[in-house]
Amino acid sequence: MKSLGQRAHGQRLERMRGSARWAGDGFRNLHPIAPGLRDPAVPMPSLRDMLWRVNGRRVPGAALPVADPRSTWLRAPQSGLRATWLGHSSVLLEIDGHRVLTDPVWGPRASPSTLLGPKRFQPPPVALGDVPAVDVVVISHDHYDHLDYPTIKVLARTGVPFVTSLGVGAHLQAWGIASERIHELDWWESHRVPNTDLEITAAPSQHFSGRTLKTRNATLWSSMALRGPRHAVFFSGDTGLSGEYAAIRERLGPFDLALLEVGAFHPAWGDMHLGPDHALEALALLGQPPLLPVHWGTFALAMHDWDQPAERLLELAPRTGARLVMPTLGQAVEPAQAEAVTPWWRRRGHGDNVAPAPTDTPPRATPEQLPWPMD
Image (tube, rainbow, N blue to C red; front, side, top):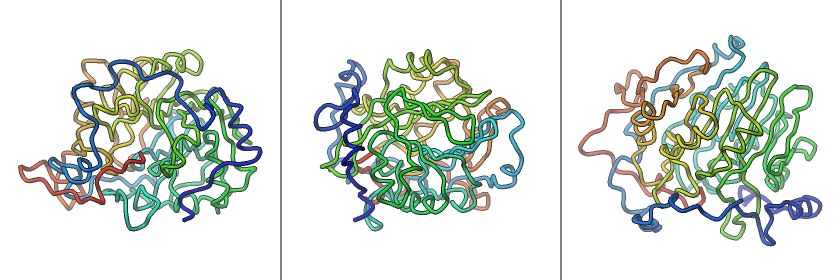
């Protein structure tokens, strides 16, 4: 099955083995899990829990609000920095005259199969073919909700270069991306995108990788810092809370925007996923730049209500001083000009293409929309 990807070998594997993060049979996180990240009072959910305990609102009852960004994309951002959230961790960044696409996922499932695995409950706000030409695609790691085979196959025809973590290039090359278009980074390594003044640096994150149970941690996972002449953006990829965020701020900051994952979390997963509470702690370590939350509103990959990350951020942000940038899907927003958050996810009315408000009898999620142990 081509969607499973390809294991690294030859010179690529030799380079991976030279990484300080390589531990003989795969990559490892920088530090042992810190106390307090996992809630010891909450047991690790079993596969049975994830498949059959479906109480709550795992998915919305109708399509979410969307905006059409295509006319806005025709005009350069006035401030020099603009972001369009396209679902989950896919964001089109316009930074100092350059376009960057992060973790693009347009496929129907976060899975190697077209028939099984988490099915997206919210389609992308625009077709992949309507996204303007980008200067580079950034892939943080190789999980299915970040590295999507059908999307990569389309992008392979465009000639766009890719910047990603060590080992992930083996998947890309197997799917038709020429080796000269693939730039794999170890943590703290940088790459200047050809014919631009945009530099991308891979930085630590606390997570794991793998597209099968046999390839767990066979490739590196990273956060990414993007810097142009005037602006810098931090993209967390997937990660738990780590003190390395302070080092990232010192070495790669300050940042004008942070894209931090806030969804698909669980109290027992605090070392591997941020969730909204830890995202705000990470934001403080990064120097409190404006926060555009990602990794929510598209797939049901955990047991919490689909809108819990957004509601929790809205509750906590005033206490922490965080400045939230929470645009509607497809809404192109300039952080320097962003207005106060309005909870658009609560709006209802099919005519507006919005989801219904919570009810006492929420729609029942199906197994194909429930968590997948490969996130």
